[in-house]
Amino acid sequence: MFIGDLDKVVNLLLSLSGRLARVENALNNLDDGASPGDRQSLLEKQRVLIQQHEDAKELKENLDRRERIVFDILANYLSEESLADYEHFVKMKSALIIEQRELEDKIHLGEEQLKCLFDSLQPERGK
Image (cartoon, rainbow, N blue to C red; front, side, top):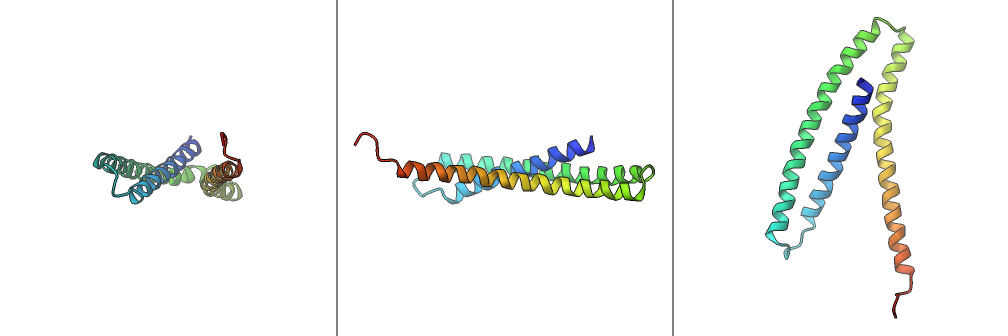
């Protein structure tokens, strides 16, 4: 159950961080001609995402406390080697989730760039 929660919380933090970065980029790239409503909408999204990110960080802190409790319980039942393997697994789980998300983002960016390149190489239709 702890490992499943770890997976969910790390993915939640990554997702919220990505969404927050996109909103902040949109705010920074908003031109002077943008309507006040657009700016206000983005500022509200930013406020909500910041609060959700803070909540997710609190969940991660609680999960870290649970990790220590689970580790202490397992220490009573597992050999030193098995306990070290478990500890390594937990650390690698988060690192691999982050790496997987980074690779997925790179693939998505590459696909978007490829589509743009392909579209720019196509002769204009209708001319």
